[in-house]
Length: 348
Image (tube, rainbow, N blue to C red; front, side, top):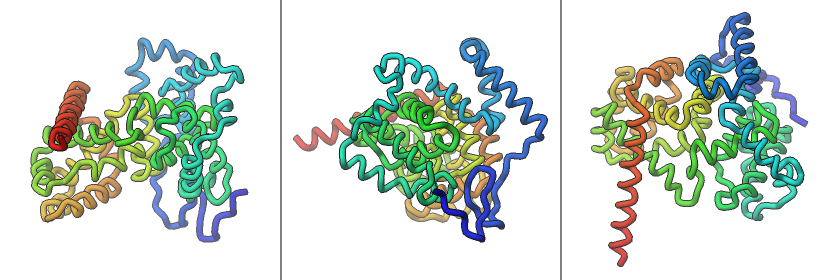
């Protein structure tokens, strides 16, 4: 049972317990407009293969506008190709459900213990996950099933908030398959031992900062700021520890449609606004910082303080192409590989 909220708390439209005076930015869309958008998405689901093949720009346009909450979960399920993946995998499973087959297996004891520790920590201010809410059982199932699905990864703490957000929108089995797609198609390698992929993307972010914010890049290098310090939490949790509903959901709408470049774009805009183009009070503070941790703290604070609508607008205008991103990632990979070889040679 979910305990009743304390008398000084109210439940917002997204299922979070908040204080009556707490400011939450609600999605304000005229009811008639929301219904039209909803019907358009329902029509797209029926014709999904056709839209993916020949009208993807229309899907992208509608994702950027924001997916109606009533169909958001199913949209993520389709956009991520989790629906196709589940149907394909279940077809070859004797139990007709690979997810439920995984739940008959038991992961490594250390993995189970790590998962149990994190259940109560995942969004305790949400009605599904407060105390012994039903969401904790579902979260346990999704994370356990994934640990069986990919024993090399097993479980990483940053996965829990991602799975929890999915469970706010989808039943456990569908949430599991979207979770699989995130891990294997969107941010592959982020949760592997050594965090090689996240290190590559952090370095690629720094390379791109040099392009979009030369002044900011100079300041970061002057203070010897490792980009992993401000990107690791953003990227590994898909910004779920930085933003809440509805901002996070809007971000994920675009992420499921356009991929990891959405995370890069947001990170670059946040850094650019903090170090070069944002409110003068913030930029001034940044250039007065004399150590890495102070400026990293300021960057993270700015991410939460700037109006999300401004960030979205500037993300769209950011001069960053897919080729730019691919080249930055290639440069980062080459540099990290060279660093590894240099380290190995020194040990010989």
